[in-house]
Length: 101
Figure (tube, rainbow, N blue to C red):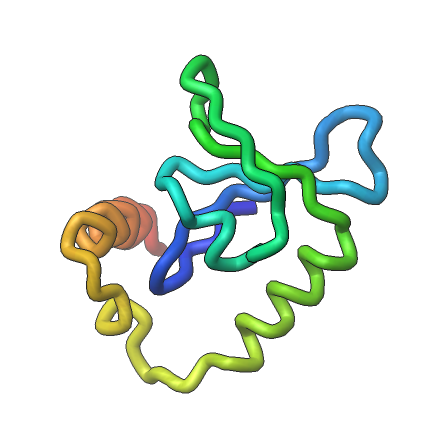
């Protein structure tokens, strides 16, 4: 699952053998911690996502619930203040616009 937030982009997956834990991955330092402040993040340059943390499934569900409950904007793109992140998000937006029916 990819999650795009105003101040973070994370990927959440279940690795084989893990049932109660999910692996949260990020490409930008600090993105995991902005959603999961207590996560123990590891950095590894040999993977597609440089930053990773194992987070209990229930904590992931709560954090995503809290994110959804805090939405107060009418336009997500306008909440992304970091220019580099905004431009990357716009590239994804554009690619998905291209596949719209």
